[in-house]
Length: 106
Image (cartoon, rainbow, N blue to C red):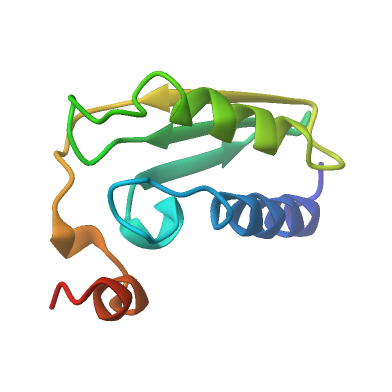
């Protein structure tokens, strides 16, 4: 897979991530800073490392599989794996400026 193709696919993955929301904070998971890493290999397998706002997040069991499925359904993606990690711990400092504005968390 060419570098340009990986970049295009990563943009599509980010667009899809922006359709996934944490129910506790009305902002998408990408702008919340919950997505730490998106890795795309030469066979278009996507490995995403993400976290949740807390280990006791009410969607801990459903949000990662939802994200994994949405990425898997992107045209051109061969497979999708989401890995939930806890280090570094999420904080509001990881939010985009847009997310901070939308939520009033300055």
